[in-house]
Amino acid sequence: MSSTSPVSIASGTSAGAAGGSVIDVSSLVSQLLAAAQAPQEALIKNQTQAVTSEMSAVGQLKGALSAFQSSLAAIDTPAAFGSLSATSSNTAAFTATVDSGATLGSYSVSISQLAQAQQIVSSSAYSSSSATVGTGTLELSLGASSFSVTIGSGNDTLSGIAAAINSASGNPGIEASVVTGTSGAHLVLTSTLTGASNTISIAETDSGNGLSALTYSSGSTNYSQQTAAQDASFSIAGIGYTSPSNTVTGALSGVTLNLQTTTSSAASLTVADNTATIESNIQSFVSAYNKLESNFSQLGGYDATTGTAGPLMGNAALTDAQSQIQAALYGLVDTGSSTYTSLASIGITSNSDGSLSLNSAQLAVALNSDFSAVSNLFGGAGGVASSLSTILGGELGSNGPIASLSQSLVQQNNALTQQSQQLSTQMSALSASLTQQYSALNALLSQLQSTSSYLTQAFATLPNAPKGTANG
Image 1 (cartoon, rainbow, N blue to C red):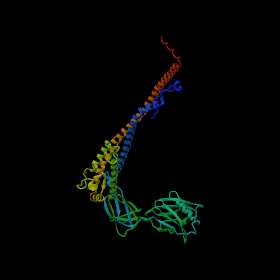
Image 2 (tube, one colour; image 1 turned 90 degrees about the vertical axis):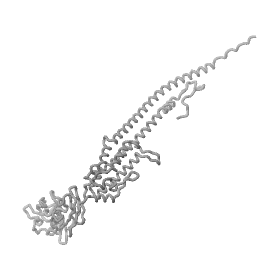
Image 3 (cartoon, rainbow, N blue to C red; image 1 turned 45 degrees about the vertical axis):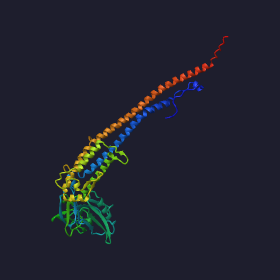
Image 4 (cartoon, rainbow, N blue to C red; image 1 turned 30 degrees about the vertical axis):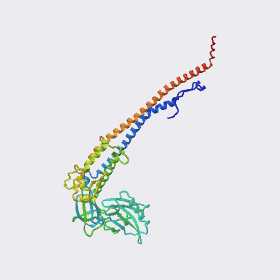
């Protein structure tokens, strides 16, 4: 605030006599407005900062709860523990994958033959890939599917015929190429489909013989067979099975076998509970909870070192969520086992700061000893994860305490914004009123000052009064 007084008393100078301004109206009104506005403005500002900080904290809390909720999806139902794995004792011979239809068990697998695709090479050798063969129409078949290729003067070379076959509409999987050796150029036809039924045949259908050297059927000498079309042949648990593909889905329910080579002795296939995945999911659950607990401490705790409290310290929404979650974590569960009834019994214990630790070795023992009990501990009725899912669903629901708190804070923030706007309007009105009042007063004082100056000057010009005579 300026130290200059907004009110001045005019002197008897000529400037004063001219009726100069007595009050600095603008300065006076500014100082009065500042005195009236500052306390209210500071209060609104402080309240707004507090509400904004709390809104941000609620958003952070909601995000932390949502992240923890997401970690439960892998362990909060019995189905989540239904994950199985298939293990081969000879991965060079075969690998396997499982789906929900698989059942636990161990099986011997012997592979005597792999499925393969047919490949044939033309017996006729041509001088080069650009050598002219002839014109006409070929009908090629692969198994039960067939297609036609018309060869004219523009593509009647060996390479032209190969290109026409490869680009033909309806080609079910015959690939043509030209291989040139010391004997000359040969047409090579290869099936992309394995299986004994997927054999290649070629006929000329134009009643001519321009392409007769390229026709092929069983017993034909126009081509030599390099690879025969054949099915895979193998056994599971001594039961024989054949497949047109080396990827086999129908031999063992819920199991897909990927055959890779034949075996000289039986290998084993084991379908078991996928404990590695479950262990990973439980570790993720522990890590997610520790992040949540860190957020609880940051938002609702008190730092004695700095003397600062979290923005949600004592807030009912936070304390209620925290107490419900901790009750679910540390409660006992009826798992059907007398041994594995709590998180601590499978190696999950609490630290002094509220975080959790996982003893992986103890968890592995529990999973291998009683997988069903561990499944029930998390995903069964009243299980830790299933209970937490229910709790968090309520906390984060559209009508839950987090949503209600958020709505309340938004309303408070809107009310403070409105108060700020109202204060601005009030100050504008007060400014106008004070300016009007002090301008009028200023005019009156200026007029009185002018009158005073006039009278002072008038009295100064009056003649001296006659002096009295003394009586003798």
